[in-house]
Image (tube, rainbow, N blue to C red; front, top):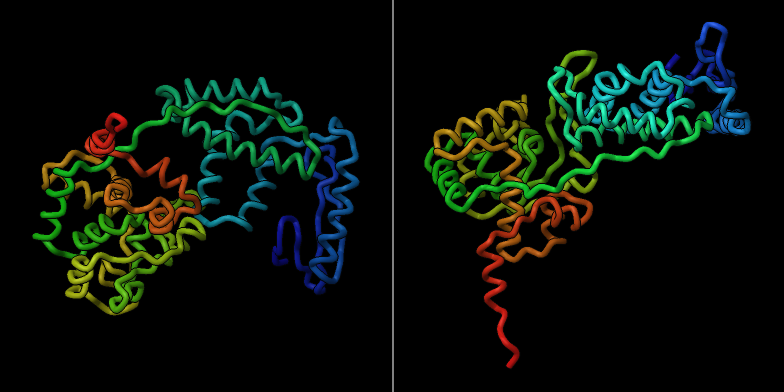
Length: 366
């Protein structure tokens, strides 16, 4: 039977079967009630009626474990999220949530117990046993757990908890200095090849590394001096193995059109290739982000620039744009953000010189 949704199947006789969890068997396995209909909408309506009845039953009668809730939540999530997001969910639940909480009953997990779990992860959460996880990592884990808990609340009537998310200390995000940027630009211009040109393009468009790896020659409109962000390349974990996946960009707002500076466009013209080939490889197969990261770090070493992450190019692009007078709304669209506040809070880092320039404009009232 082909699966059509969360616990909905298409039978060989053409009917849809919907299975609703209604309790537990003596062996501890979930007990289901099946409903049947000729159309998908009708079977969903019948399932909703059964769910409504279930919600009116006392919570104490439900013995849903975290493991079982996770399995059902993942089954539903797989239908609505990108493959890379699903792989991240699986990684979090298998490495962090299930080993400690998997056997617990959802109804027995109080706010206090979950706060204890959070504190444990902060102090001893590393998988290698050498200390705790960062507050950001623990927040990511608990965000997944909260979604699982919300699912259990909707489907089984489990009471939600109010655990405390760990506080993240906001850090000033690093960027390339003017001197570093100049050294990098000179090297890329004077040592042209597909990789170096791609890095130069990223430095002047703010593309994410996955978006850069997914860029094809057909995505560049030389007549209008723009490029179209249509896809991204990622390495994700799937069935215990990692593999390169070509998919859609991070979000709807990430699908965008980005103008290209004239001097960069002129360089690209000399390397133009078959329209359906990827820019970096010049072939029908893309380069993966990890490879670009390694190449970038090698270039930094040649330039005498400190070892930084490829994503720093995106931060640098955003900051330079602000310095050049770009308004936040325009910049947010160039970066593919849904909200200009994200751009200002995360990517714009005024230099001390800019601050001094602004302050120098202050004077006594005439």
